[in-house]
Each structure stands twice: as structure tokens, then as C-alpha cells.
Image 1 (cartoon, rainbow, N blue to C red):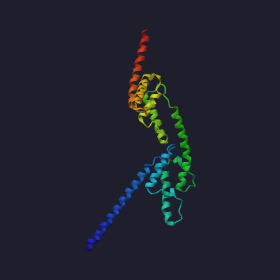
Image 2 (spheres, rainbow, N blue to C red; image 1 turned 45 degrees about the horizontal axis):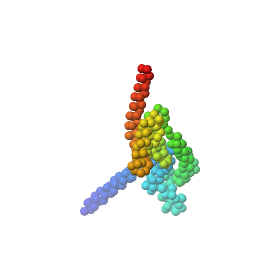
Image 3 (cartoon, one colour; image 1 turned 60 degrees about the vertical axis):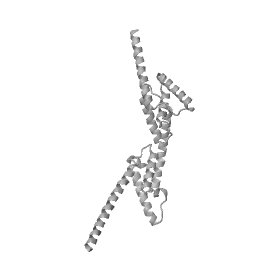
Image 4 (spheres, helix red, strand yellow; image 1 turned 120 degrees about the horizontal axis):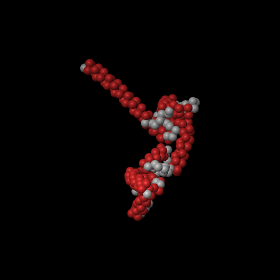
Amino acid sequence: MLNVSVGYKVYLTTYLTLSFSLFSVLGYTSSLSNVDSIPMLSGSNFSEWKEHLLLVLALMDLDLSLMTERPSSPKELKHWDRSNRVSIMIMKIRIPQGFRGVVPDDVTTAKDFLASLENFFAKNEEAERSRVQAESSSMSYIENENVRELIMRMKTLGAKRKRLGINNIFSNDMMLAHCAVKMLPLQYISLKNVYSCLEGKFVNENGRWHTGEIWSTKELISRCDMEEETLRTEIADEARKREQG
């Protein structure tokens, strides 16, 4: 009986030790995965970076030092100090080496560390936002580009607007197609006239103005391909007539 009891204790101790080790490894792996989900800080993604950072710190129960001042109670201080130390380490590892000089050397709290980054990058992001707004206002058709290239430029601009938290009129595919049609030059007049007729028909049938519900970008590209082929044929015919004349 004694041998069985001792054997069971050895088995239980071994099992618990291995289980604890496994859970420790899994917890460590999960923590690394959480940290990796925070994007690397760049010159124009501070808002997104901060949002991911705060979520990860909250999930890891490490955001105490960002929400409260350093406590005086030894019991509370232990948890706060760990939160402060690890939060700074996580922020540093998700910042490129070249950006770390933004934070003064005398900063010792995670709260001040984040505030220093915010003071620097918020101005940077505001300047980027102004540039993107100006780019949106001046967006137009470039001579000799095809509609695919125009749409890709608009989608790229839309992605910039989304990243910076600017209202993104290009997020809807059909609204993007609508804006692209309006930018097309007079050589696409036939296609633009068809689109205008469809707009009028939509209003008559629905009793309201459409919000980009006529063509998708895929349909617009298809129609433009046909229009461009027609234009090329007409130009070739004109050239032949001149040669023959």
C-alpha cells in the first residue's frame, strides 16, 4: 500500500510538473503572438499602432502602469512595476531602432514613453493626413493612362485614407467606379453618356439619387476595354483613309 501511495505521488508530481511546463510554454508562445500582432511603428501609422498596443497590453493584463500613477504600497507596486517594465519593452520591440531616439533618455514610465511617441508622431500623422487630403482633392485622370491604372491609383489613395482614419469614399467599389467615370476624359464620351442615362433611370425607378450603385469597377474596366478598342479601331481607320486619300 505504501509503495502504491509513493508511486502515485511521484506520478502526480511528474504529471503536474510537465503540465505546468507545457502551459508555461504555451503561455509564452501566446504572448509572443500577441506582441507580433502589433504593427511596427512607421511615420504614418501611429493611431493604428497605438490601438493595437493598448489592446495587447490589456489582454496581457499589463496596462496598469498606463492607467495609474506609481503606487506607494509595496503590494501594489510589484504588479505596477512589472506592467511598467514589460510595457516599455514591448513598445521598444515594435519601434524601429532609428525611431527610439524620439523618446528622451530620462523617461522611466510606460505612460511617459507612450506620451513622448504620441507628441512626435501625432504631428507627423497630421501632416500626412493633410498631404493625403490634398492628393484626394487633386486626383484626376492622367493623360494616356488606362482605366485600370486610374482605379489602382484611387484604391491606393483609399488605403491611405483608411489607414489615417479619414472618411474613405473609395471604400465602396461602386462609388469608386462612379468617381472614376466622372474623371474620364472626353474620348470616353460615349461611355459617360451611357452612364448618365443609367443614372437618370436609377433616379426614376428608385425616387432617389444613387450612391454609387450603377457599375462595379470590374464592369467599368470591361466597358472601358471595349471603348478603348473602338477608339483604336477608329484611329486606325482614320489613318488608313488619310493614307489612301
